[in-house]
Length: 114
Image 1 (cartoon, one colour):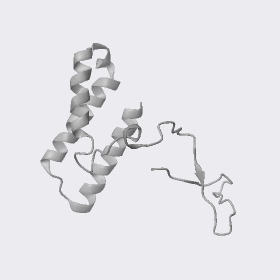
Image 2 (spheres, one colour):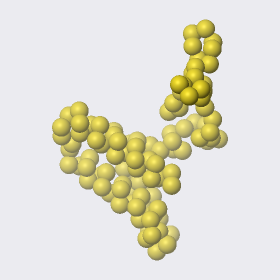
Image 3 (cartoon, rainbow, N blue to C red):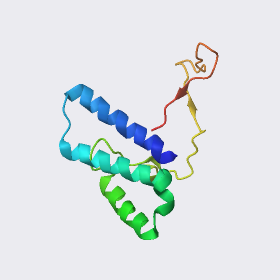
């Protein structure tokens, strides 16, 4: 499921670049499609037919794709120094005077961790 979340980020990057520039190099688009295909094979119904040799080939392809363009950044588990990262950890937003900031519904506002 982590890969599908990462795939959503990749597509957001793609459409953001496309909206701002109006053009995307075909090599970048091809890499995006290969990444999409690999994720859908691994996370979809075809995942049960993937052999160890297939995994190794896909892993090699993914290492080539990660970071090769601005569209496909390294996943968090590869580029984080802290391997004990927990997605439920958060940094609350505070005001300049040290008061916690709240949303309109009263929830604590949190800073995004990247």
